[in-house]
Image 1: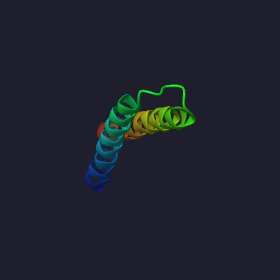
Image 2 (image 1 turned 30 degrees about the vertical axis):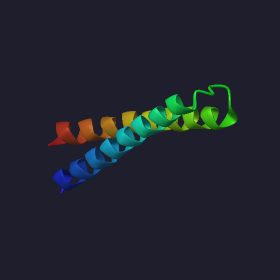
Image 3 (image 1 turned 90 degrees about the horizontal axis):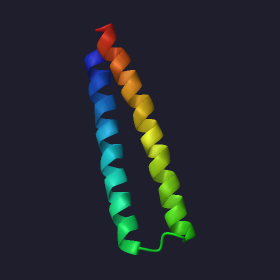
Length: 66
């Protein structure tokens, strides 16, 4: 069972990293770094990065428990 959850967590991490890359690419295209939309995008990116850190810690704990 831990293998299943490790796989699921890794999938969520990979998906979040992909989303961050797409958000950053879109942000670079707009070039308007002071706009509210870009600020919201920045906040979303930071929230996703924090989520990835938490998920990675959980994944590490599952690895050490196995």
